[in-house]
Image (cartoon, rainbow, N blue to C red; front, side, top):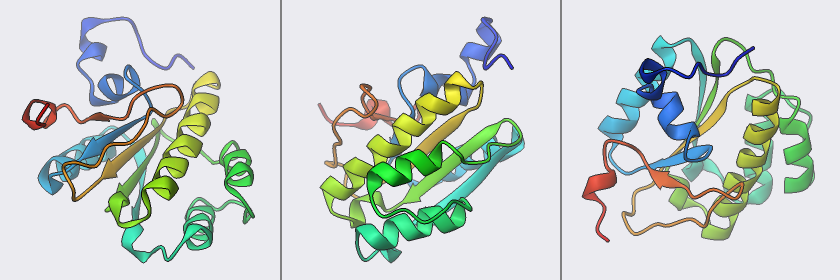
Length: 163
């Protein structure tokens, strides 16, 4: 399967805009996140939403992700990364939405974004799309690049972010 066609129409698509810069993007304002979730659903993406405030720690995070994606339980982030290679990507692709990612420790959120980026790279090699939309409540929240790519702001809000 060809992931995208090299046409100007494709370059305007939300999935293209996110994937050309990495595998994840940040959201502050809920209305933009909801708008983009609706777009992905309309394009036949499977969307799975997570409430990160429910995660009491790394084990709870890994258990929730594994259960919701119907993966075998993992004992570490490395194992979770291996399990994510087995994730069932149907339709146009899979979008993981992380509501309130900054509710978990920053290092834990960073590690999750890294694992998801590596899984997205793997699936992209197979012609499958896996994207992460991470919503945060703190405008100053910044994550290090994941999958050797930065985690950028979504196309709606990037002009509003102070430099």
